[in-house]
Image (cartoon, rainbow, N blue to C red; front, side, top):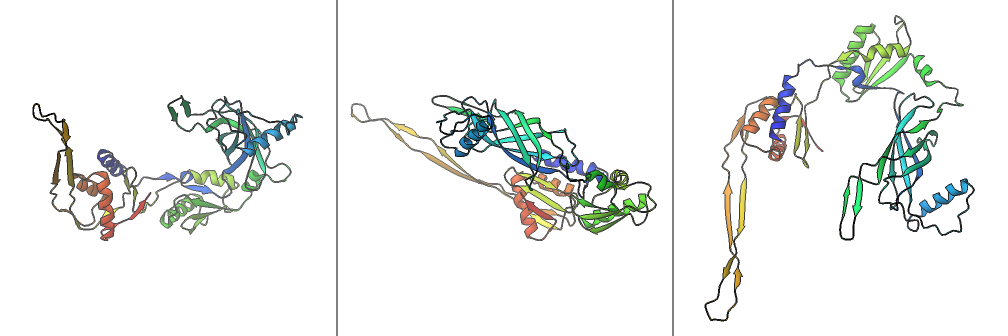
Length: 371
């Protein structure tokens, strides 16, 4: 882990200081976004690993309703199959998806089914938050996990109660009857907002300056740290889509805040290049207590008719690493900070504690975010 942190620091400082990114990779365009879809359906064809109809009333009701759709009356029958499972189907619909295009779907069991392996999803409408159907999903599931069990043991790998269907949903015509062509509506707009994925006032100002330098004065302005307003000016020969296509290719240097990200569960530390540390002294030592059990056997004297017993023997030793104070000079960089802590033999988990202590002392000029 220490080698990884050192390597990341070296790569960060090996990158040119003026590294830039395309505006296309830094913003989300107003009204150009994905839509989250969800639906409720049934998976059939399971090999006895589906829902128990006695414990999952909703599966029983759904199965009866589906069979009635095909003129099969099972309302008074005692169904006892375990080859059916009730599932929730989720998908993400890209912006401006056309009728007939296909999208991936994820299928997840909501009953007591133990596995969806080998199942087939029956035609399931997918709705948005306004209960409007956008797509219909159907197909065979691909399940990555599996479960195997015997009389005395079982093993489970992955999540067998969740799977995916690649290109499993067909998009219906979402704009039928509305009389609105969203692509044409976007092209005819005079203004458009670009939302920064990482809000920052300096980055927003640089983005507006780059657009104005390319298109002309008044084409863009930074409205707030998270928004740049794009204006289709009179001198631009084209619609808003043409302007957006030109602007997306411009490159801007993002201003990265000084931030330290810590994941205490895995011992991972990620630090930005603007992290600075004021003059501070650090001492780090480890107290190690070792307990060793060495039981011995006690034999009775000859002809004493005694019994052999095992007597406990415990050895306890204490050792402490004598680490001296290490001094980090004022305004050291990320590379110097990592090198200094590594030179002191600090492990990643100890480094997390040290960084938090430096922050508490007011010497770390950065924000700490603990995941």
